[in-house]
Length: 111
Length: 112
Image (cartoon, rainbow over all chains, first blue to last red; front, top):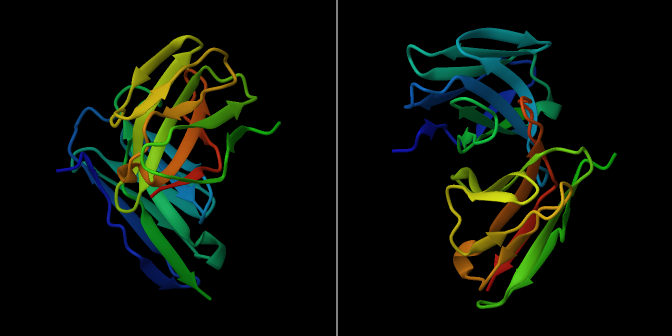
């Protein structure tokens, strides 16, 4: 069993919908949680970062961590076609240096 | 400020050939790493370095060598290419205490 599980999709939704992307993990030592966005044929770029439990909001994006359930989520409000990309979750125990990655979910926003 | 650069963008090798993937960063980051990305597998860490002269193995190091003689450069060497090494390779860098890893554009490698 992988340490981090993420549904690869693809997830296809109409423009303007609320999108929910999720990851589950097995190692309770993880404390740092990140979401990276990767456009086709590009390198990943950091979208959201959360330490420990709780919510963090940045514009249309909200990251949520539930350590008791070992479950993290990324919500995208008012989704746009430009949000079409692969979203990867990543987490680590005590630093950013050695991240454990989910497989990535491919998101398609239909105009 | 170019960020993280990788060369070449594409490469086709025959089984048994060797080659070096180049990675350079101009952000004075101490930490650099190499990942491979395969469909359905996410990013897997091959090797990483916490500073010039210091390297260590990641999750999938077999068949790859690295060295770090300068802060800026972190080349990845394939010793004897195998079809299982067909993948997209990403180099990344970050600073101590930072939580953002900056990725290069990737090298798409096919081994026939």
